[in-house]
Image (cartoon, rainbow, N blue to C red; front, side, top):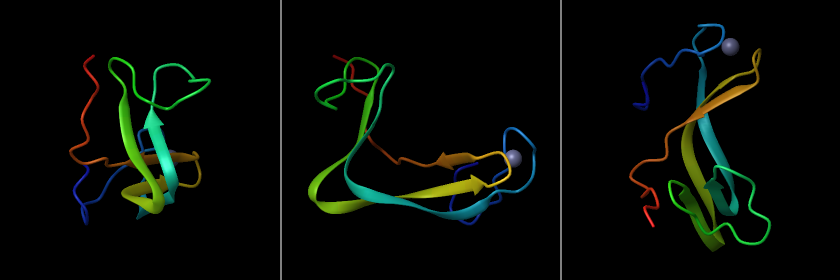
Length: 81
Ligand SMILES: [Zn+2]
């Protein structure tokens, strides 16, 4: 799973997911608990994009029936601190 052009199956219904892109602007992070002030990653968290002047874009697969998206975040570092 995860390679562009390869079939990705929905973890809920098992149907093949539709390939596309997850696009947005500025900042996005995977966090364990909601951050109130900054998105700067804490231990075990990942800052996926931090581009004040640009968009971000990741390969992503969607199941519109189950409302699930799986995305690939590449080589972003997991915050160890
Ligand atoms: Zn599904």
